[in-house]
Amino acid sequence: MLPSGANLPKLPPLQPFPLFIGLRYTRAKRQNHFISFISMVSMAGIALGIAALITVMSVMNGFQKEVRARILGVSAHIQVMGHEDGPVKGLADWPPLLAQLGKYPGVVGAAPFVNGQGLLVYASNVRGVMVRGILPDQENVVADLGRDVKAGDIRSLKPGEYNIILGGALARALGVSLGGKLQLISPQANFTPAGMTPRVRTFTVSGIFSSGHFEYDANLALIHMKDGQVLYQLGDNVSGIRLKLAETDRAPEVASQIAGEVRVDGYVTDWTRQNATYFRAVQIEKRMMFIILTLIIAVAAFNLVSTLVMVVTDKHPDIAILRTLGASPGTIMKIFMVQGAVVGVAGTLIGVGAGVLMALNIDVVVPLIERVAGFKVLSPDVYFLSDLPSDLKWNDVWSTAAISLLLALAATLYPSWRASRVNPAEALRYE
Image (cartoon, rainbow, N blue to C red; front, side):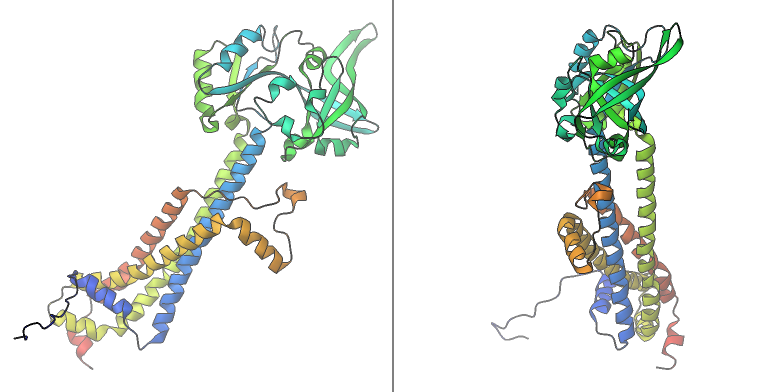
């Protein structure tokens, strides 16, 4: 009996037998240091793969978000378009429709526009362009073109003055600057006694914009809507109405509702259809990158197989003693699954922490790498971006962690099964 007042020993909390032995094996110092080294390599590989996957996915999300913002800064969320062919071109009697769409649920801005194609000629340079006729005061409620004008002013577009604003890349290709006069040739022809002659109008460059998206900067020219109606012989009609939404991602849903509820002599389209090819390519690239980097995690996770195989070989006497004491094959299997799962969980937690920190601080890490390596990761002249964008999405984090844990658990199955098949008599024969 213990003397009165003696402190009773503290018993460890009750744990399931396989969990207790598995954790004890994990913490124990091994005589074979190579096994410990392989375990650390497996853990580091899992952590590195997860960190790389989370960082790369966040950067790709950031690029997609940045490019989408730049595209939507020039194009509209939804466009209600009139027919280009037929007896009536464009939208007729459009002011009531503009007022109705401006009050539609989810719509925060609406503006009419004229759309057409043409050839710009300056000196000996010729470029095909998309011409957009806008109302400067209303255009700012559906796009950010006013903010993107780097030289001149969007308010310089006035009816009858035939001013034009060019994209930066287009202006460089033509070799024209502010104040330069160029000719815009329209596809519509004039019928004269001498035959058909092209419609040519002289425009003065009153502004240059840079949206950061090459497709628009190299192919888009802005004029006043009234000038566009005259140039493309639309009369009082417009090509369509552009809409801006409070929630960009609801564009397909709202466009479908407008097409079904609002009477329009034309058709309704949204930004996801206008740029479907680009965003589909980005989505496929993101999916393939996810698969490739997941394979890195898989390689690291399956290093656990070799680790556990060596541990099982090293623990043959212990397995035999446990079996002799009454442990079932299932219990032995659970012990080694616990040991492998601990390495997988530790690697996953380290990788998730490192990946999240890297994704959230990419603006600090990349400049540090640039200073050490002595080169620029992103050249603003090429990518129109000075910083590497990052958009961390927790769904990507959780899915990456779940895949890592499943792969680590799968890697423990075969070695654990082999451990459960050890014959106690054979294991103890030479002990």
